[in-house]
Image (tube, rainbow, N blue to C red; front, side, top):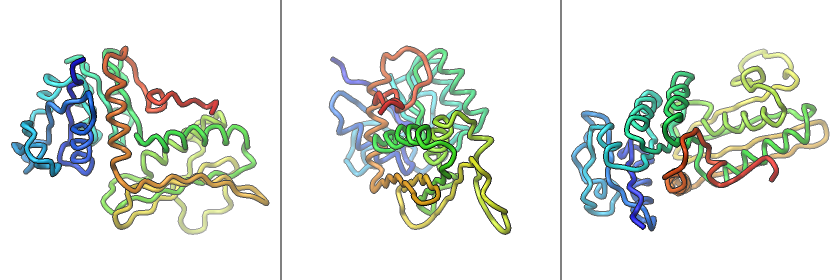
Length: 272
């Protein structure tokens, strides 16, 4: 079988070099294209040099649409507005898209949903297998324990992260809300300061910490009178995200159009 042709959008970002190394090291995959925004100093450089691998014969382009002409699957860890544009390119060229971009708003979600009518799109707040198991367990536990247990979600990331709460923390919140059969938007408390009054019953709280080079720590706390249950996932290297994203890319090739999650890729369900 021919290797899967993979493109990377955002090749010079924090995830870019890790993805370049992971694709290059994965049997059955071939990195054929990569891009960065126009004017970025990485444009024109060999992707292998960016990743410390030595030349791979693929130069970083400033044409995002160009990588969709070369690849069968594109992995996108960029910015929300760029991801929405890339979704349109994916639909236009019939290329599957794996999206790890966080901080997406309703208009970005709509662009992905529209493109998913034509191509397979795998979107995940976190591509770690462990985190996706955490999502499944959080949903199951929330359903079992019920609203008598207060839920707090605490996350910590490096000082450079721009969005808060993290996409993974929000995904945990969505899993808890799904387990409780409620809408997260009506239950979320995304910050506390000053005299806030007592904790509203049934609320799902979020706390965001930033500092140092923390790759990503997430804890979901279920607390009631007399006991507390905590589930924690800690990522010590971005490679866990890259491995999951490449796994999703392999899975997405040839998949029917649709909007998928990492839980589809690893076949996790609430029945775990």
